[in-house]
Image (cartoon, rainbow over all chains, first blue to last red):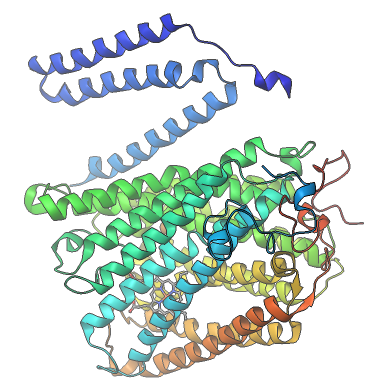
Length: 96
Length: 537
Ligand code: HEM
Ligand SMILES: [Cu+2]
């Protein structure tokens, strides 16, 4: 079991870069509301949120350095989430 | 930290740790003690729910008012449903038998996060208290039914908020148990315990844990939205404010359909342990059972709309949900065939757990087949919201999860308490219970087909005879219940000491003494190439 003790040490630099990226993204997602995007406003906000969660999961939550199967599990969860949302909206799409 | 030798001689029931008496239980992080805490709390809530059920049946003995007003009846079925679903069958087998036995079955000393495990139980108790508070304080007990449907749930004058919050807290308890079990099964298997050597009960707990972890947050958020709607009128579900009440049903059933698999999967797992043990034969189709377990856990997420056929969904959504509902029935059927084939040519030892297991298969099949009637669009239009539905889900949830719970209780009782129960009384209890069950719920299929609606305290004269039979059945069943409980409580204290392996099982829990030592194993077990959970001669 000795190899399991092995921990990947992430340099501070990486954390700082990610932090700055997250801050920039946060400010841009606020900033973008001043542009009139019409029906794409929500989409824009969601895209920023997706990128930010991706960064947090990958770096802060160490998915990048973990075993592959953990990444597969997380991916699976998001895929399931997506499917459930799509099915729900199928109902709305066809409502008369 | 204890060493094994320091606690030698004491088993988990007699062992005395930092605290004495009751405190030694409610602050214990031992998975076996926590399992027993759950057993006692769930048994208490089950008994409460049964009494409410009896009261409803008494009311339905004759048309018109018998013992209670309409409003009281509404509150009774709501509280009955909330208790039975959120406090009995959802925690049910995972929290009791999963906690007590799963770590032992995988050769571990405890679950991965023992303190979190204790917290789950505390949250459970807190949730129960909150729901009970809704009954005792405020303007009357909740009367929405256990589904809390919008818009009524934010319009009714009754005391909804504590009940909603209680269900929310119970959800958290469930999520933590799921998380704990997932990590435990991934990380704490003993050497040689490969995924393909895991007992099926553990496999079903694994599938269940995923559902607990991923589906429960949806209902949590939904209940918060109902609370916000009630307090601030945010207008998510309220059509007057541009909201959509059907969205509530979507969100509610996105959780609550997978939740029926939280209830039934561990039940199927327990049955998959009992049948091979009492047939002394390798389980038929081990891998097929695993595959069908995971298939149920997955496809179960995608069929929730079959609860909403008559609610105003769009047509294509209805076809889609009906089709997938039929597909999700297949893996359950696979399991039934596997159990039957396991018994075929086995050397069957008829004992109480086996009686419960085969009656489980019987009622589960009736429940499942009647589910197909509800799953197809045309027939559901006729029977939805009738007594037929009540019969269906009691057959599947009570006859499924409930019977499996009793099966598991009689199977693992000697291991858990170190004593054997009186078998003659146990069999009598089963027989009386089973007959009562059939008499109680079967007439409801007929009544529903004839058009008797559910959730009414009154009915037309033409439904009288069916209801008399049903109410009579409830008395017989409760008699059986009393026999079973009295026998088990007596035996837990005075029964003959049980051997380590009274049923000649092959899974790891039968290799250690009854009751188990505090740390389960003297030395960590190692599973060899040729060992397996069902390797009978
Ligand atoms: C002695 C045992 C029981 C009796 C006599 C009983 C009786 C009843 C009756 C008469 C109703 C229908 C009320 C109506 O629609 O007018 C009902 C509803 C219900 N029962 Fe039971 N039941 C029992 C056990 C259980 C168990 C073990 C479960 C769960 C596993 C359960 C879950 C439910 C649920 C979810 C409802 C629906 C409540 C609602 O409409 O909101 N019951 N029960
Ligand atoms: Cu369903």
